[in-house]
Length: 319
Image 1 (cartoon, rainbow, N blue to C red):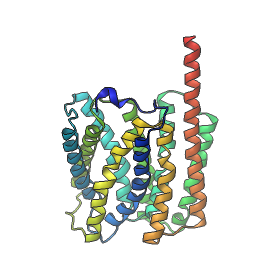
Image 2 (cartoon, one colour; image 1 turned 135 degrees about the vertical axis):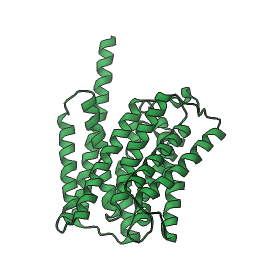
Image 3 (tube, rainbow, N blue to C red; image 1 turned 90 degrees about the vertical axis):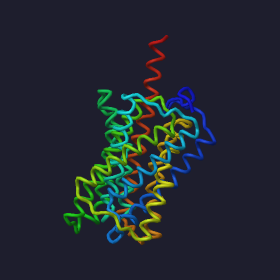
Image 4 (cartoon, one colour; image 1 turned 180 degrees about the vertical axis):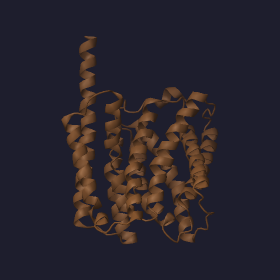
């Protein structure tokens, strides 16, 4: 796909069947990756989290770059574009995904997914800061609603919290912030290479980042169980490659439609965690989930209203 064919995220007004298929993949696969991560890194699995992330992303990055070459996408890239992909790759994967993997050694997969679902709210905050605009009342109310939801979700943990639980919670709160930073950086710094190639570079840099963290933290060499290997394979083939579907969906569908993955993924994760790992679903879980998703919906709607206001202002200026 050439530069001209890629378009730009958020500028698509019509629905694409191919785009909807990619979005469906993101819905199902990303929602199920929390379960796979939990199975892969929980106690006794034999797979240290950062080692697992490094091996998975280095393999996925190489596969995607080979695929890009076979698709005759240009792999040549400038130093500036390389730095753009490196920064986004580290924030999205090492920060956004790596902290989740580390936390899920002890935290339930559904709980992790629900905390990560706050990423769109952080995107809205970062965009407001970068644009030097005070948050609207709607955005402020949405953020407050989402944070109350986080508190409700954390009540079962806080009633009998340990040091390990506290660190896991902190990691799960920081992870969506990192994902938001990486997403905003990527959105504001476009590159000329195709989607598959850019995904490959990002995951390659993410894998290098994981390897450095594993080395510096002194993680032991992996000795995975068969179950952990299956989880690793699922994350490699489906989890990592679904990132490409996410980029395709952004190019082929309106951004507001694509970002609905933030509503669906936690529901899928909580259901699978309950069904397969017998993770608890309490009144606190249901109430917290409702408030978090309401906060995310409000943040999305605020962004939509802001875009409408910008379009109207531009139309007035041009006239």
